[in-house]
Length: 307
Image (tube, rainbow, N blue to C red; front, side, top):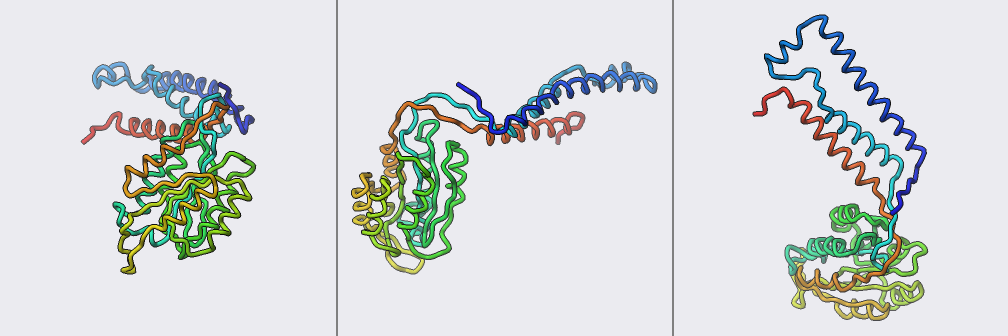
């Protein structure tokens, strides 16, 4: 295991640790010496059962912990190690067209797709790279490739129905492929009802073959279809999604409910042993905020009665 720092110059801020320790002990000695000139604090401490100048170092330790977390966060800390992880980098492309509002899959197609997309992220081994794209008439990058499952799931949660009408699968694959950069082992997990109305299938097939892009398709919806907000029946275009996965060397899955969709995702995970780098910056910052918040609450309630 090896720790890496994107901005190592910020580590010089660690010199603040001994400085704060010195200030802490100096302030205790100074304040106590000054206070005894005006009152008998020893008697007051016995009467109120409160130690005004406590020698409990917990507050010091907690504050130093917050300082260390912030410094390492600013330094862009990451950790590198060898582990069994996915041989593929993935982009999850979720259809956000109006037909995904159909409720033949509870509570609706889009909500079910988002829920199970997050389940797929949980199934992935540590270190797997995942990006997120939402598409309707256009495509929107919700998350660049990242190994942070928390960031990826937050991006999925932020997906909503698209503003531009249509289902532009071609544009979604172009956008997804750009996220991979120079990576060669790449796969797109396309979740859609397959109702292609922008572009054509041959054009899409030529693009994925030219760019060596593996596309796994997951058809979401029932064979009977469901009623849309326009009082029309929306059915899954299974033939298009099957052709898309077949022509790219991917796999096709049919998901009529949440359990089937979860089972579909679990079949797409393939592992290999390689070095992975996990960016800790986001987690260190969150932890520092949590600890600081708890410390602030306890400090303000220390001599108060909680209702």
